[in-house]
Length: 327
Image 1: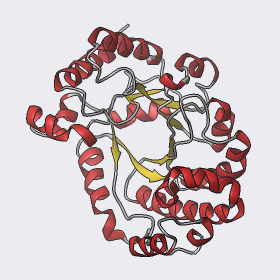
Image 2: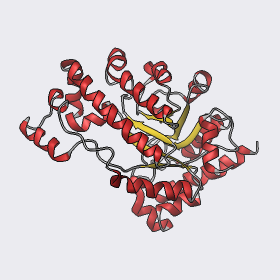
Image 3: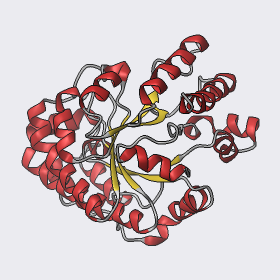
């Protein structure tokens, strides 16, 4: 089975020949990996990664206009201003060259499934407002925020469908909602302010023939039913260290969406506890042999992780996914 086929089997709730594997390793460890393996690409090839996370494309907001608005507002931008701010052109196709190159490298040359990082709604606008202000604005400016969110959603849709046209398989909306114990805002706020715009985005991706995945850190147990209604195919990271139990997913939601993750960067990898690391890898992979899991890190591996531990982790993953495939 080719890597891309293996991932699609999982997304479509079928059992693959083995658990598909990937890791978010490049952001903080590129120099170390390059010294040890020659390049990040060589590391990915050694461990036969099945899928790849792509970044690139145009930015969302016109940088100069955003800077001017921030200066005029004494360092802050409020929703009525953001509702009128000019956005960058998502159809500036020259800005997609990095994505084109990554599709060629991962999908065309190595047969991997490729998904692209795409702005969400709440998280994306923390960069405009600042997260503390943004949380206040949910109460102070709900109508203005809805205008901003609608504009962000339409931009995201155009960006995502452009990426699908370039050969990307899945659009990955990054939108952190959770703290360690629950949402950063009320469930009612999520349903009113977040749900409608994600619904538009997911429906547009599906209509365009792509898969849709959601990244949201933290504990989002209270809105899992809403995530199902949104129609997401994959949820990342389903963070067990924040109370998102994988066994619960298998028991209650396995026919609704797959999970991506399983290797927790907050508690498991990067702490020098190799016996614990190996046990956790095996526990999650044993939960995953029937399908429903794209095995991956929960976020970027941090730079306190040594190369010895990183290699140990992926040696263990490489061995176990093949051993478990023959059980």
